[in-house]
Image 1 (cartoon, rainbow, N blue to C red):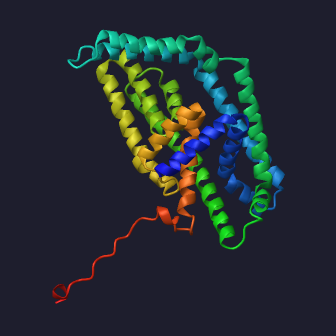
Image 2 (image 1 turned 30 degrees about the vertical axis):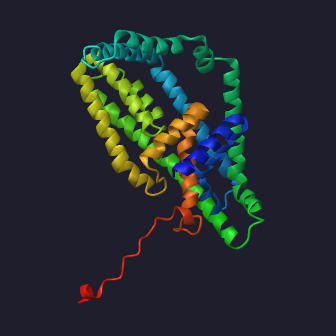
Image 3 (image 1 turned 90 degrees about the horizontal axis):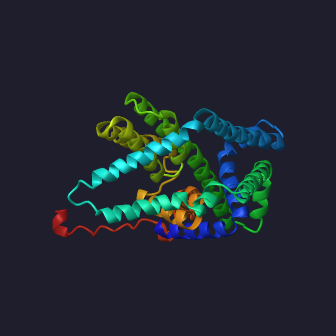
Length: 348
């Protein structure tokens, strides 16, 4: 799996070099897999493919626009207060660390804090991460291209696939069909299960924050939902922000209880909910997930972090069906040791 992850990291690097084309294409493929059951239903009921694709695209755009309107309209004014409280909580945490016998010295803490503050307040961060007409234009063009590609994938996907597999016959054709089915299952399962898990994390942490009377529960829940699309790291980061806010407003004991709530919610989501939703669709070890997220972030930024896991899961899924529906490629099959034949005295 690490080898497959390395290949995916190289693929993410290639995607980042041609991001204006490749990122919309990959996102469109993932969303097309998520809408595959809907398109199959429309074809069974003899609806025009163009109508089914248009309805799916309208649903996706309405969901995105509705989410943005809700976030900006309901809690947009609270984000600044959330940032201030999180920063105050970080300062209190630093002050507490200084009281420990093994704490770093003041110079090291000041250098670390100045590096973070300097990056956030720098012109490079402001122009590169927060603003710029060029960045807005590029994002808008990418979203527009993704919508166009997604429409044609939904409308003409089966015909496009048949065209691609024309050169293959026999075993090669069967392998291509297995790869198609597995990739669609992985991408579709990843989108639906990740969205459900993110909603579970957000609702669970929101309820916990209300019980503990932590302010800014709504923006913290929304932040949890958004960051949960980055496996493992996202939910932990959102929980850390919630704990910092609780530390400032309600004290250390309340912050510790928030951390406990985050741990319980994450454990329920990771050990109960996700196995039920994903099953064996996305079977990646947690270590592999961490490595590919870190590598994807290094080579592709936030986009690389978001795409690294589903691409790795799809690549590993292809390996698992390379020689049959339940028969991985020869090099990826588990080794079986033949048991030695029993000796004559053991048989007696």
